[in-house]
Image (cartoon, rainbow, N blue to C red):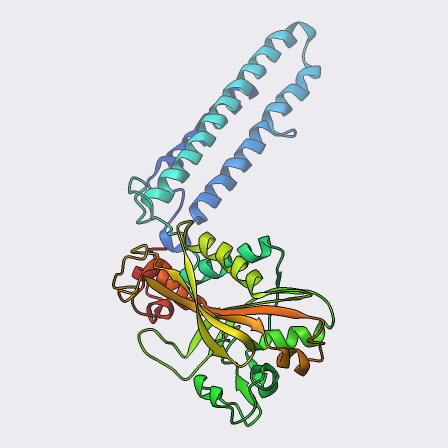
Length: 360
Ligand code: PHE
C-alpha cells in the first residue's frame, strides 16, 4: 500500500474508534463518582490523535516532507492527494470535537439529577430592615440640612448620661429612666442625649449642628417598649438659636417624614437638660387627625421630647451660656417606624421573622 493510503486507512480506523467512544452514553463525564474523568481522558486521546496526524511532526506533514525525493512529474499529483487527506483529517477532527462538546453538555445534564428544562430557583433579594430604612431617611434628611453625623458610646459614664445633663444623683427625674447599671458609675445609656455632652466637650466654643442615631437601653418590656431600642438625637448650638428654630426644623422634618399635610403641636413637658421643654406630636398619619386606633382616637401621635438647651448644661461642659443658646430633641426610631408602617407590636422589629420583614 502507498504511504498515503496506509495513513488514510489508519486515520479512518482511529477516528472510528474514538467516535464510537464519544457516542457511548456516559462516556464523556464518566461515572458520577469520578465526574469529569471520562471527559478528560477522551479529550486527551483526541488531542494525541490530532497531533499524531495533523501536528507539525505528524504523519501528514511527514508525507509532504518526502515530496522532494519524488520524481518532479509525480509531485503535483502527490501533493494534491496529501492535501486532500489533510482536508479530510481536519474535517473529521473538527466534527469529532463538536461531538465531544455536545456530549459533554448532554452528559453533564443527564448524568446528574439536574433537569435543565425545570424553571430556575429564585434567589430572593433582601431589603433593609424597616427600622434601618427609617433611620437612614432621618439621617439623610438632616444631612441635607447641613447636620453632621455624630456618635457616642452605648456603655457610658454616669456623667455623660446623667450628671452633665443636669440630672444629679437622687434627682427624681432619674426615675423616668429605668437604668441598667454596669456599676456605680457606668450605665447602659438610657438615651442618646449623652452625645450632646461628648460633642460639646470635644467641640468647644463653635457652632454645632449634629444628628446622632443609636441604641439605648431601659428596663422596660411590653407591646410598645423594648429594653433595647433606637433613638435619634439632634443638637443645634450657636448664637441666637431660639425655640422658633427648633419648631421650624421639626416642622420641615415632620412634613418630609409623614407627608405634606402633617401638622404638629408642642405640649409643655419637663426634661432636666432643656428649658423650656416640650413633647412634640404630629397629626395622625393614618386618620389625618380624625381619630383612629393608632392615635388612640386623639388625632395626634407623640414623636418625642425636645426643648432649648438648659443653661446649666452649657455650664457643665464649660460653655458660656451667655454667649450660646441651642435646641435639642430626641426621638424613638422604633416608635416612628411602628407609626409609619402601622406595626402593632414592637417585638416584630427584632424577631427577624421573614414573613414580617419581606413586607418592606
Ligand atoms: N433624652 C430624652 C428622652 O430620651 C429626649 C430628649 C432629647 C428631650 C433631647 C429633650 C431634648 O426621653
